[in-house]
Length: 326
Image (tube, rainbow, N blue to C red):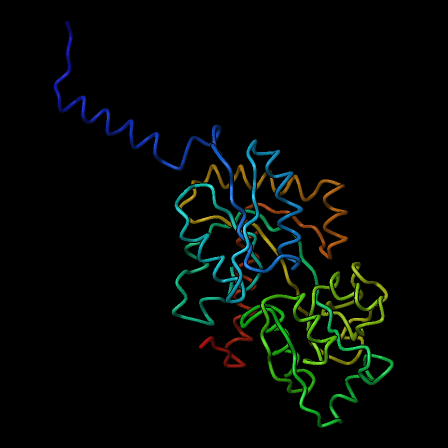
């Protein structure tokens, strides 16, 4: 009877064990079980709504259930760190600009490096922000409100979803363009910011247009202007801030899917193709438009290029305004 030496048998068994225990199955077979889509903001926030819209069709496309998991805090960086450090092979992240660009510039001690520890999968959509104020704020036009705010001498405060988020950096940039000097008040997410503004705790905020316009049309908030260069297709009835005399001011938020950098390139390409196809489909495009997104969808390389461009432009704001996370 033919027999193998004991050391050969042990080597073969070790290789088999390593293969079966590895989270990185062959791309044709992956994913092998439920995927987590981690979001850094609370239920009802814009990133959360996008993640929940994406989860079910993505699960169908990949043949496995996708569950949304909220890990709230630090402007989304707690969730981003969890994704960067995931080793199960089935963890993804629904990210916003800041988590994938300037997070490490803001905080050199951040436990993850967005450019090294996260793998770009696909850009989902982009949107300008809307500068909103309470309905009781003075002025009937954006230009009038800006003039009143400059002349009032009142100490204003603004809300954002956290230090380093685009809403925070955008407001810091707005200070340099308008002469206003409002105090920053961070909140867990945009729903809390809207409630605080309607309750009189803060006087202005840059908000995702879909969330803000719901309250504007209900007569609870006032729209001052969009951070787009011209009228946005998301709200063509709202002027841009540039129309109201705020020069050289343009800003976009975006959301994207990312994975741990350790994920194999074949898996990334499979994910990217699935996400891009889903968000570009007519039904999902309309659903995301209703949520306030101009759908993009992209290759990993396309998202990587956007990350690099935003790291430069948003990083300039961080450096010029000397913004740091303590």
